[in-house]
Image (cartoon, rainbow, N blue to C red; front, side):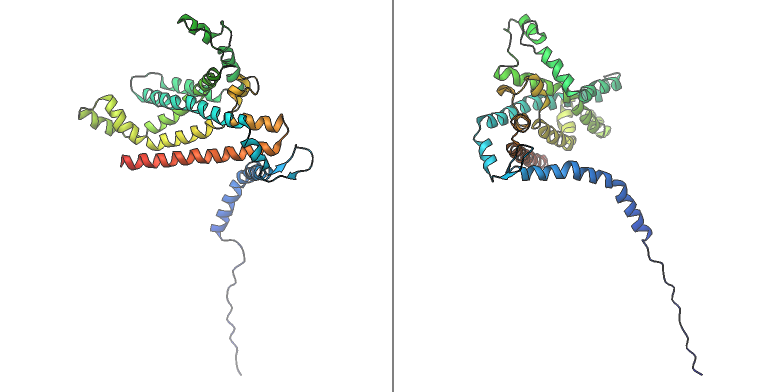
Length: 308
């Protein structure tokens, strides 16, 4: 007789391995963020690009018009005025703000200042305050009347009252002051976090070598904080190009002296019901942000190379 020996192999049940299960669980946990980002971030952005080439009032049918929307805004003097205002207000509000934030952070990080936690909270409070409330308060402070606090203070030094809301530079200075007050504390906290990561040994060694405080600041603090400075400049630049609530409330509408590019976009969409030109403005703002971000990127790289 011929016997047949059958070899039985163990068959593993089909299913996911533990590694894949762990990875799948991780993706499921973070999926709500990506879903919300796709719905409220990616889709509006892509739809805005599409809408920039359409004529639409928000209710009727869309009509493809090609580059006509871009032609309309590029031939509008107010559009270029809004870009000019945005850049000037951004420079006035951001440049001095970053310098002041760094000085405040160094002061908070020093051993001289007491009650540091109280000052940190006080510096951060303006950032979490409602923008509308801030704008209303500053509108009262920069009142065009002689009894306004700022005009009354200027009067003590023999300076005539300024028309803060209607004059070309008065409106820009007032709005830039609002931005300065609101963000200087936030950026100082970021600088403070960077300062606390610098080893104390470097300062002790420099002090032993006879370096003064200003020399320690220039040759230790600033070079070690370079990545933080680059980050803050990047975020501040992008934020300054998106100024909206401050000029809207302070300027009491769409005044030419305080018109920013986002305010121009808002006017086109929700006052003129021209969503096509509003989207073209949004695309132009997107490209403008890319330009300024690229300039910051190359400038920071040049600083790194010069530092090395």
